[in-house]
Amino acid sequence: MRDTAWTDLDCLVEDAMKCWGVPGLAVGVVNGDDVILLKGYGTRELGANAPVTCDTQFMICSLTKSITAAGLALLVDEQRLGWDTKVREILPEFQLRDANATEEITVSDLLTHRTGLPAHDRIWSPPGRRSRQQMVDALRYLELSRRLRVSFQYSNLSYVVAGMLAERLSGRSWEQFTTQRLLLPLGFTGFGFSKADLESAADRAFPHQWDRCGVYRGKLWPMQATPAGGINASVADIARWVRFLLSRGRVDGRRLVSQAAIDAMTTPRINAGDSEFAEIGKIHYGYGLTCEHYRGDVTVSHTGSQPGWGALMTMMPAHRIGVVVLTNRDPSPVRELIAYAVFDRLRSLAPLDWFEVFRARRQAALDKEETEEGARTLTHRSDSPLDEPPEDLIGEYEHPAYGRISIVRGASAMHWSWRGLGGMLVCRAQNSFQLKEDGEARYPSGIVISYEKNAEGRVDALRSPLEPAVSDIVFQRRVAGETQ
Image: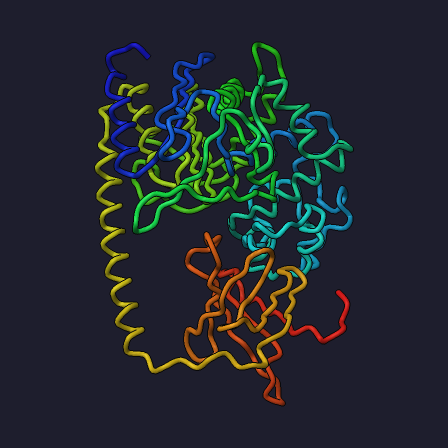
């Protein structure tokens, strides 16, 4: 990176970090067989002096999906399954609410997010614990929003099922299989699969989030849909992963995964929408990878996002160029503008001012948020006084996939608990309430519920729009003495 064309990269990174309040990040650049840049910027934790290094571990979030897909590619190479193998041939307990989809869904359908099942992320999201087998067993109770193979709907649960396929065929946990068959052969040196693994790492970043008061050190939430987004790794290791993909399955001159399998992963298979930028254009999805363009060149990429973490890896296969950006701040455009700047320079294109593009969009978003907040305040002031929750709201309510909500009477207000979260019940409007979380909120915008009464006028169900793509999730009252 001694070329004069790169002398402004450090300035761009530092300016972007300052503008978006990113405490620390790491950048890796691959060109051909060489990793030509590995560098850490800023600090692992806000207010601390420990610097980000090339070995600092971050949550890479959904970059994990490409690794899960490659694990299945190994099994395809060994003819232990095919991309068109039906899921129930390997997992006979797999079941959706749609009988036809249950029988017809293939490995390819899982990896391309075209099962018809929307996200339903809140059946597994932390802190409530649920095993992968329990997640798979819960699928039969979830409403689908599309027919099989009709449209792209991003689904972490699909990748949980994909991880279960690897477990069932290998006889090992997904973590063991992934470590032994992929990460160690690739030369990964510092990685993990859990919150505990990251907390025990000597060189690790801390998550940070943003609110209207500024950037703050956030809570480290576990990622329990691990095959969908649970790997922790350093930029040095993810640069190895990018080099492996650009080499179409080779590691230091030896073949690990067939070229045909890597090509299958990077082939566009379903339309995933359109970018708001003409330079990107239409978006498609392959197996664990997004297929796009950048200024006329084909790119293969994936982003990763969790509260406090933002990651990106993106590649131009035809030119064997790849970029990795890992950050310890809630998702921001810093990862994209750095990657685009690297592409512009390596392709000798006139640089686009992505910094200014994203900064203008950020200011517009802040202005809009301020206007909407003012409107909400005025609306609230003009509302008539809200009723207190009815006393017979107290009780336990259950959904077979989303779990149990408990409402109890506290000293001054009603309180709720659900999947390890809890707090105060706040009146919103008529029969609608907000579940306001105690402490640092997992869902800062809050969870809204409403109640339903039966013919006798007693509250017998709660409903909440926990998955926007389908009808409200209904929690039925549990009868006293009822067993689960």
